[in-house]
Amino acid sequence: MIACEVDTPLGRMMMADGGSGLAGLWFSGQRHFPNDAADWPRGRSATLEEAAQQLDAYFAGRRQAFDLPLASAGSAFQQSVWQYLQAIPFGQTRSYGEIAQALGKPAASRAVGMAVGRNPWSLVVPCHRVVGSGGQLTGYAGGLERKRWLLALETGQEPPPAGVGPARASRNS
Image (cartoon, rainbow, N blue to C red; front, side, top):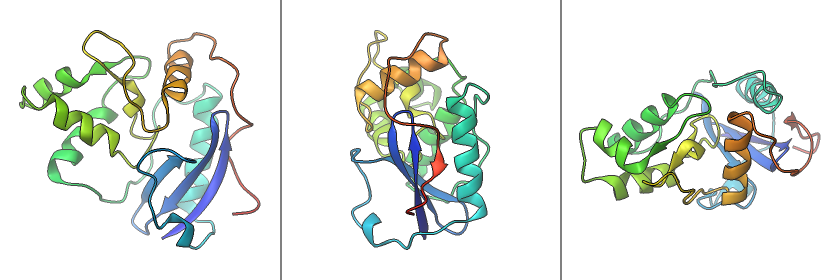
């Protein structure tokens, strides 16, 4: 596992390459940030460089979906939820209940919510596109302000001012 940090309009993020693909992308300080991340060696890889370029393009409005190899993670159910999240079109949302229904598990809304919250690939696997049953903004491991900002960006609204510059690999990584 190697990691580096990138600056985004929503603050610093850590990216990790697990060797078989992107192992994670987390906002600094978000819930479910890996406990051992401070111990990971810092460096660069082709996967991390490509992820940084795709993040730049996303935040600049030139990319609507990510095309990165993802390292395997999670249970079979979590993987099915994360795969579904990748199919939610840019600028659209789905509720936890809609996802549960689509997966053939209509009583599993809470389990869907837990899987969404454990998504290790913020933005790349767009968990910010999941909302409550009435369309209300609900939990986001990176914080509701970031979720609001991302949804505004994707729906063509002016996102509120936030953070720092584009997603460039930190020179201190």
